[in-house]
Length: 157
Image (tube, rainbow, N blue to C red; front, side, top):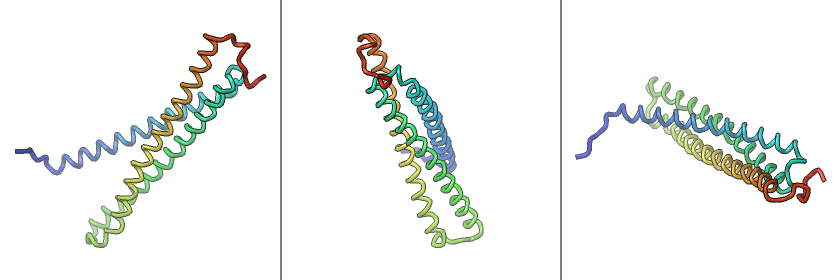
């Protein structure tokens, strides 16, 4: 027979999930800022990158900036979700019926779904940007190792 966990376990695991989601989003935001800064510093040193590598770094910068925007929208969405959850809890304690709370609960469910969608989009755009940065760096390193640097077309000439 399956063991039934007490109701408190759901609340406890829900809190763990919320903390992990916050940590993951913050980690992605931090990595996106760092990667975007790295891309921009590489793009400022245009004579060191081939034209192809510059294009990859430019696309990576766009991807990382997109990840930052999505992460910021995610934070605002979560704040709206928490505010609505607080409102629902307060109204429930004041004696509101389930029918009276139904509209707010529907909104909260949509905000929660949007949170997960935004997290996956944030992670995806970060991953795409990271792959592009790595490709640009590898392209530059390979060019230095395998080819004469003066044979490569660069943005400087």
